[in-house]
Image (tube, rainbow over all chains, first blue to last red; front, side, top):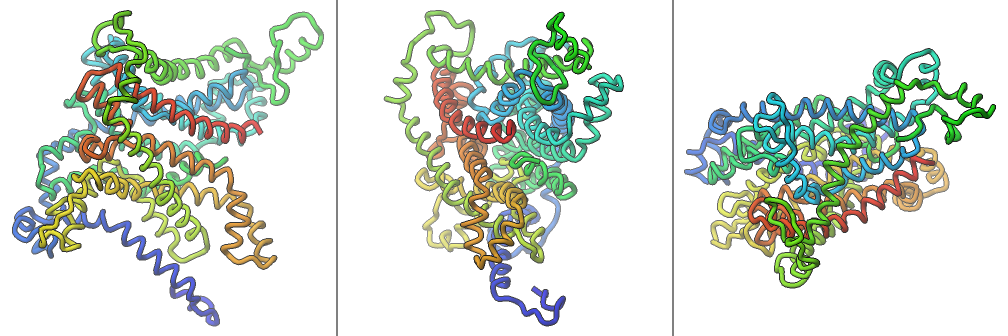
Length: 295
Length: 324
């Protein structure tokens, strides 16, 4: 709006001014629910009991954050999420980069079919497959103690990681193969002539070229998996392995009318993805763009 | 599973052929892959593919089979469990929640298609220009997209709560005793949930559409400007038509999001009392509350069939780009 200063003769066009006014109004509207949640979380419960939530705060403090942190055992659930999300993201990137590599650098007969199966699988509403999947999780044996302490996929980190990887690999493979298609096959071909095996080519030649796409996908996958609610809700008992999003749902029951604590808990749960978004916004947006357009 | 070859152009069909001179020459030229390489490539595709088939496609197909039974989910399915199309008869006939759920999914779709998606596209068009602060505006509109739907649900509960919520207080309804129960009243809670869902959907569509706008050849706009077209004409007559592929993707994304709607409805009231959706009916009937597994599967099949329409539309669109 002070653009006029940059070139002395240009005057502020009324159209531009109206545009900014509209956008500022919209941005304020968009931020309001979040700011209101922050405001509510910062107010002591005694203050809101006395004056109601729709009032000027007499004091602000971080007490609600620290009490929900302890009472709802948030560190514990953050850790659960971490145990699921970190291997989940890494495995998805590994699996989907292998798939995309094999599907784009070589001419297979069923290339397109495989890619379509993965992409379509990722687009299905999860509820469509949940009934048989639930049964599979209760019946597939996992006889390895450190992976599963009840011998099943049900109610285990490994089960949630597995469905995340398989489900998200659809999206990630689609995006990465769009990206890898822009890499000429001659690179792979000449590396083969030089005697490199395919594993080396994938790891040492193709993956370094895909670094921007991998960073973008990693950022997106982190958010998708961190924010997941459905898989853990159904495929885990209300138990001690649930990630923070499902744990948050229990918090609603526990602190029914204490909106200050509910707000503080929701905001604390939202902090990690917001930090990732703020730090890696470029990657984040590029990842979505790669999915929607070609390269 | 297939012949992995490095041929960029014509597919080699008879790679393992013998004798013929052409085949030998072809082999010399193309069989750069050792047996070991082929094994590795087969594993690279085969293992994920097997998992995808077992955990996603087999359940999708199994749902269809289970939907013809009265299986409770426990023990084996025997021929005694077979009930033919009875689940579907009940579903389409006497089950009182099916029609509302279907209607709610359609309202969800209509609301996003008519209001949220066009608004996201509109913001993208406004922000796709050299302008002070455009990045900040974009970041703020996109912020809700990174929040979990659980968090979105909680944040909006602070707005909607009858006594304590911002909206009723700001409208002065709490003093007059004319409290509106935004999330509890079955005639309006769907729209309240949709406002919360749109808060997130708009930013998502905006980013997708911005990416599309950036990929439009700038000379097209310049040419239109030279020909004397104003901004609105340039957009509707030049930019929008070239954006046809991305427009289709955005429509499909909107449809798929509407069919997937679950989290917000579940958080508000477990998808009941005005917030029934096909997705919540499936889990409530078969896992969370009752064990009408066969009946729940019939609902899942209905959702599957509906979902396949936009999925096939989407695939045919993006795969056409790929083979081209």
